[in-house]
View 1 (spheres, rainbow, N blue to C red):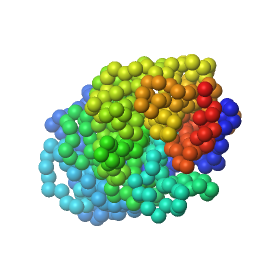
View 2 (tube, one colour; view 1 turned 90 degrees about the vertical axis):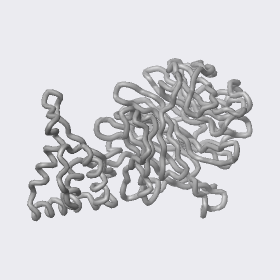
View 3 (cartoon, one colour; view 1 turned 30 degrees about the vertical axis):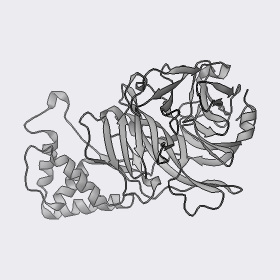
View 4 (cartoon, rainbow, N blue to C red; view 1 turned 180 degrees about the vertical axis):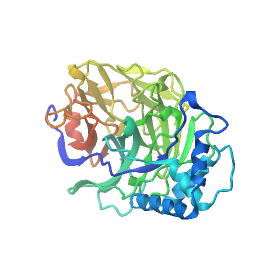
Length: 430
């Protein structure tokens, strides 16, 4: 619901789908009191597999491939790749044949339903391929946060089109999800990781699940932005929260084609927090970022180094009842003729999350030109129930033909959409 009623709500809803799975590493280990360094558990499992006779070995290989092939591409390749990762952990290096390698890879893999519990907190950017788009239309990419077993968060994607008159449509996801592969070189401390997901037929099949200790419990709330450098080159950057299960830190995803990705930890005092959102270009020759490192106010940070963020200036503080507890961003600022449009979130009574907006000066984003005094979106009767009640939240929106398209999460459960003409939105600000 909106207050005042200026947002048009879509009937499109994206819900979690437990049938969408990826194959990811599985690593059984011994409890600390039972660790056997001379004959570790990995070796014991492999030794058991190597006792299988040829007939049983072939039968087990057929069984696992048949089970997985209906939901996954290149199953044999995936399992053999996993065997290659496991082989380096073996104490005893026996000669191992093709079928044995395949089965070892299967025993150290698991099928993971990455969005079984929730699919929410989307962001949206222009697709890198705008060919064959209808006149006055665009193609877009959305990122979404999926939650699976153990409340672990991963990143998944959708594509779609938005046309004048015809409205917008989200494409069905590809039939099979593709996990990332870590590419060398990789820093030993996990601060830089390079991933390849190019085996997917389309972007909607790509899934980024945690691959480093800092991300063990989740890659949360990716805020994608199409970034334009001063020389005119473009790429896609996205800040996200890496959650280890105990600590959080901000990290940055980088890609040009959504096939190869680089994930790198941010440095500096401001990086040990959530909710950072990068401006889509440099301002005055410097990178700019929104943050809320004090968990109460919205800050503006500047840096000459994309990966280091310190200091900052507090620019927006809680002012209205729906944001008395906390104010933050709902994605990267959007550059319009009038300034920088920022979709904000506010936390109020009974931990209700609402969304509003503000307009920052284009040359000096520390100056607030206008701000909504009432929420644009707030939890309504149909949007208040879910895993985390009373929350509407977004990680990024898009403007086309002077209309704002705002995808948003509902109650940490599902995602839907609202839109508003830009002039109507600006007129609602004071």
